[in-house]
Length: 393
Image 1 (spheres, rainbow, N blue to C red):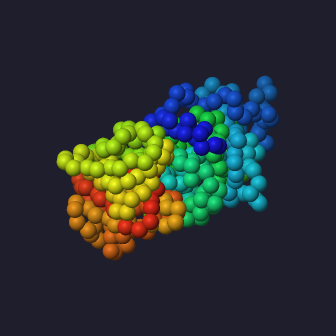
Image 2: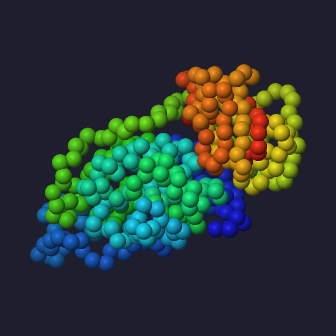
Image 3: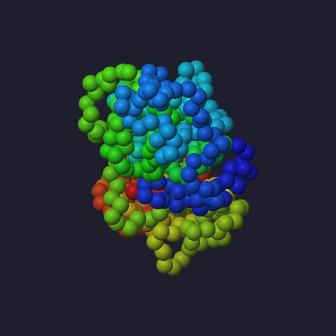
């Protein structure tokens, strides 16, 4: 996808909704018919009754005709630009697994904190249910241009210990086929190729797993197989990050000219190019302030002057920043006008309160013990950074 095309696509509003990033455009909701996978033959081991119809009393579950009235059919992978965790990097399709597997389609992008918080459950389901017929297909649809790079996604897959196939959806082909608007989003496809479950954002893990178990049992019946003696209690994976959604929290904030109009409180909004930022006076919570010289691009802001700064009054327990640096950079972190303390340090910030920024990724800046209102200040001490967005937990 060209940069121009990407900027057109991203010239939309993205907001946080219920543990997801919402991609708002003019597309209709629902499932696109164009990529629908037609059922070409009856599932193996299907038994017919005297009228020549699949006998669901013998197989368990609903008939194909009943499902046709209730559920959309699965959509195919469209215009994939690469594959990870497949044999020799060869393509895979949804169609080849219909009638053989229960398929979980997970739309994600690696710098999305909502996606990262979901990952422990996906990994646990993969480990627990793969032998019983669950296939997870991760569809990596990039929010930012750097997430299109194959090597970046490979590194993210390795860091997250993802063992299942991942499809690179740089052209938004599969995203559009499913008419998706969210990161993350999960679809469950049953043994007959119908999308029978759809969940947006984080959460509902127990509900999702119970549907997986039900579909696996149905699939085993279809194929005349016995379920393994897998423990049917729901998983409780390590590394789960809980988020308190009962308190008001700062929404996602973007630096780039395409999306900074609601957030940038000083300087010209929605304008690409070099600007010198100054600020004095009252700070407004949930707004972004810059200091020094920055080059504002459509997707990110690049620091130009030495000592360039970011000021962010926020309401949250945790602060995450998507950032990178061409040649490496060091920034100093302050909280409420003081050096950040050990109680508030994000995992990527060292004990001296400095953060080394290298790869383009999500950096954990603040991880406080409790929710609160604070003023975060980030000062560029060495090098230059590209700042894309803030998210909060």
